Image 1 (cartoon, rainbow, N blue to C red):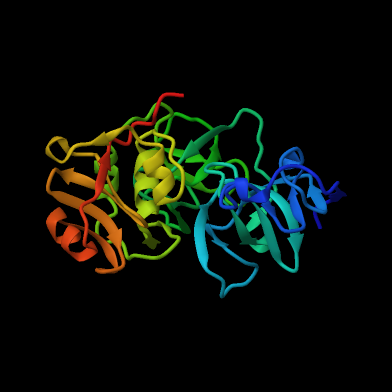
Image 2: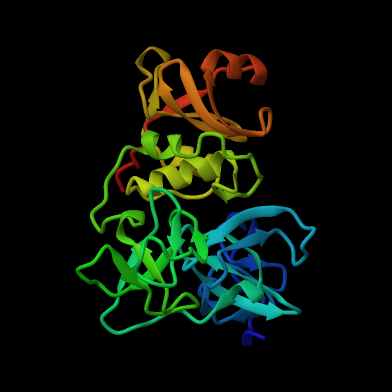
Length: 298
């Protein structure tokens, strides 16, 4: 179990912190929050890495609990508690807090001289040898992280973590300076099944689609629809809507392919689809607020 430190019952109100992105719950919190939350115990976080292909993040320590997000191979988690097969902690990439199966986590991969790469814009195949005709032994979703050794060939060896000794084709990796069109990145998920909490081509939700598309295009992005919209630019008037703008309703978000077409993952079609914005407005009973996904200046 992660070490706990008894704390004083003092500090500010818990309600001031969003539990989705602040690692506290009744009785336990990250020690970094000691100045601002009052709980009986604080924990020193232990950094762990997702060693499974993906790790479901739940609202409670149970397979039947609501899925709130999904972490990808190589992403890291600050674990505050590890009990009865469940780890409670905070994702380092987007700050989201929840419960993960402890079996999906392991030590953070390290290797001297290695380069960290991210899969994208599509998924990546893992090969047992640096050869196109070698039978693939696995697939990693876009935005997964790997440590590789740079070489001259088209295949790069994975040098740390559970896939050490396998190979990945460099065409399946984002470049270090990759910058792309978020709309094009989102288009790559057309037809993906809708799955609440999902972030991969096996299943994705509305905010997961926008988050992953923005991140593949080189932009930071938080997890939920309200967070993505809050971090975007100022509101765009209906007559000024353009390709790439975010369209937001309370509880739903998508990205415009053009001023009148919305690309979104949605439960109505149970898929990621492009459809007339007017049809979505009619179904939801309201016009969206629209903003450019460019983050506001600090």
